[in-house]
Structure formats: structure tokens, C-alpha cells
Length: 470
Ligand code: ARG
Image 1 (cartoon, rainbow, N blue to C red):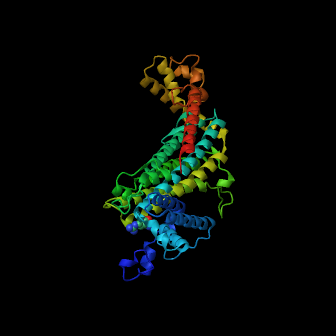
Image 2 (cartoon, rainbow, N blue to C red; image 1 turned 180 degrees about the horizontal axis):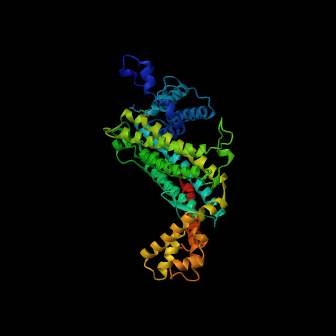
Image 3 (cartoon, rainbow, N blue to C red; image 1 turned 60 degrees about the horizontal axis):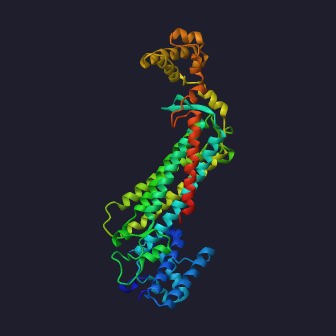
């Protein structure tokens, strides 16, 4: 028997050295060593319980796997150049520890269901870790929304000043976006939460295995009902990667705002020194590199999803070696998102909010124009006419370099007889915000109600985290 590969019996020659390296996935899948050991231990216990292996053999193998676990945990495990992947590396180490009986571990199992099991377990723990990070970022947003409650800033459409809003309202918009990301991550967790073990290579096995018991031992909610689907389904990875993509897109939008807001032109925030860098030539520079990098890494994660979907497209059932490439994309997406969530959370928690600059910004841009028109409409002027009257006032102010707040009551009354003695209230920026009290609006009361909802939804997320088995 050619000793270099587990399939040596059928082969007359060893694999080409480069081909062995080309076909290896160890650099990517070694992160799954804990999952691989968990899966193998659950499997061998079941083999013992079902009398497929003798109790003694099953126990010997389990003890051997525990020793391998100690070596991996302590960093003393020595990988071999010939190890194609983490599964074979662990099996080789097992046989080295317990002898030929280690070869019985693979009874009623194939690497195909073994890999699918490990990746599902790993995907579940990645989803949990990411929901945790998302919740931490949401908590930072919530804390800043609380801290700066009442601060008014310009709201934009087309990046042109539109209507004043509360900073808290703007921050909460992101909290809800990340809340949806947490939902998608949880859905990805659910789609990974069935055990494929026992599907063997593709068709099931002739041994009297107990799939349900193994699934339970591994913390899976169910078993995959079809062995072909069990070894070829990677939807849980596309779900996870897609959840990472939307979260990255959201982070990228937030970071783009931080880049803008920290510029001299806006000056709304000052990014902490800990999250910025300088220039090697321009002494005055302080650059929002971290925010830019998060924005940039979003492209990579979108690429991960495209790579994964393209890889799966057109694959015939059941397992194909193409699928070995699934892990690098999905794991990269998860790792990148985790880092970006961490960086953004730190940036949000430590940046200085320049409340005065926001307030000054809210005075410009004629943002209470809609409120003036609404005032007229509420006093009987058809809205189209009101729009035109206020449009003319804006034009006049613009010519004179004044704001709507600079207008006198007399000037308003001259523009329309519908302006009464209380008309100046309509140009008051705080009043303009407070009056937008419709549900989900930026009015102080509406945002207070929203803060309560936000706290509740964060609590619900934390409850899920406490109950999720990783
Ligand atoms: N390392 C491989 C993977 O990640 C395992 C290959 C399993 N099966 C096979 N028939 N080659 O997919």
C-alpha cells in the first residue's frame, strides 16, 4: 500500500508534488480544528453506542482525539507537508497516537459529510460572533444617540441640505440597518443548523448509524433529510456571506459619512487620534484612514459573495472538489466584517461630536423652507402657491446673503397676508424638528419613542445570543 495518501490502495504512484500542494486546503480549513474534533468525537461515540465499533475501540479513539485536541490547543501539533486538509491531518495524528485502530474512526463516514458538518458548525459560531459584534456597534450608536439627544443637524437628500433632523435620529437610522444585518446573520445560523453527518459520501451508509443522536450531541436543531443535499448544500455559506455583504455595505455608508463629517468643510465630528493617521509629507494632515479602509474592504466582501455563488453555479450533485474553495470566500467575508465592525465601533465610541458645527450647519441651506410653506398651507394657502411664495423668499435671501432666520415678521407679512404674528415660529429650527412628531419622524417625542424601541430590539438580540449554541 502506498502510504502517502489514504487512497493509496488503488494508486500505483504518488501524487505529483505540486498537485498535492495545489489540491491542499489546510491553510484555509485549519481554523476548523475544534469543529473537526467535536464532529469526530460525536461520531465515534455513536459508533460505539450502536455497536458498530467495540466499546473499547471507540473509547481508545476518543481518548486519542482528546490528545490531538490538547496538541492543537497548546500549539504543539506538528502539521505534515502531506496533510491535504485539517481532517486528514487530525486522522494522521490520531493513528500516530493510538495505532491502526484510529483507522476505524472513518467507518460510516466520508470526508464529504465530515467537511459539511465542520463548515456548518463553524458557520454557526461565526454567525454568533458576528451578531455579538453587531450588537456592540449598535450599543455604541445608541449610547451616542442618548448622549447627544437634542442636537440638531442638517438632514440631506442628494447631499444637499434638506430639513433639520436630530443627530440621534440619524444615528438610530444606522442602528436599525445593523439590526437587520443581525437578523440576516441569525437566519444564516438557522440555515446551518442541521446535521449532514451520516450522509457519508453521497448515498447514506449500510451501517446502523444514529444520525439524530449525533446531531443532538453536536447541538444541531435537526438532520438534513437528504444525503445528496447534505453533502452538496452550501446555502448556509451564501446566506452567511450575503449577511456579511449587507453589513459591510451599511458600514461603508456610515464610514463615508464619517469621512465627509470629519472634513474641514463639514467639521461635524473629530475622529480620535487612535483611529486616524497622519501624512509623511503634510504636517497638518489627519486622515480618516480607518473609515476609508472599511469602505474599501466592502469591495472585497462583495467579491467573496460573487466568488461563492459563481463557484456553486452549475455544480452537478453531489460533492465536487470545486466546493473546497467555498471556505476561503465565506471565512474571509466573516473575518473582514468582524474586523470592520470592531474598527467602526471604536471610531463611533471615541469620536468627538462638534455640536456647534452641526447647529451652524442646520441654519444654512434654507432648511425651514418647507415649514414656512406648511405654515401658509395650514392657513388656507394652496400648497403649490405657498411653495412659490417661499421659493421667492429663498431667492431674495440668497441674493442678499441672508438666511430665512434673518427675515423679519414684516418681510414675511409683505410676502403673504396669510403670515400671522406667530409666523416667525415657522423659521425656528428647533421648532421645525420638534413638530415632526409623526411616528418614525425626527421630532423629539418621536425619537424618544424610537430610543425605547431600539433598546428593546437590542435586548431581544442579546437574549438570542444567550440562547444560541455556537
Ligand atoms: N478538503 C476538502 C474540502 O474542503 C475535502 C475533500 C473531500 N472530498 C473529496 N472527495 N475529495 O472540500
